[in-house]
Length: 131
Image (cartoon, rainbow, N blue to C red; front, side, top):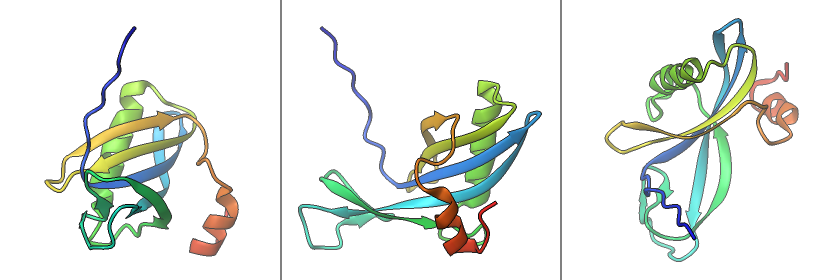
């Protein structure tokens, strides 16, 4: 028998969609996962995520690279470093990270695949392009 434990990671959760060609990574989109508490109606949240309480995902919001509420440049640098460390050179990747209130970025997962959603209509609605 075994038990697997994972630290609770406070902060905002992001999904980063990238495409790589010969080791050069390009970020297609950064999404902020918004969460709602299932146990309280108060504003008991920390950086957009309920803390130490049950929650449900409310929505994913496309993050603008120049929005000061989101450290997009740091997230992109971190994700590209992770892809380099894993030896990802070609294709799409979907990486999820959390940014703690102190700015520390922690890896949640990396998947060498496209965003697990019907991505084209989402992009068309948000940015007017689905390429």
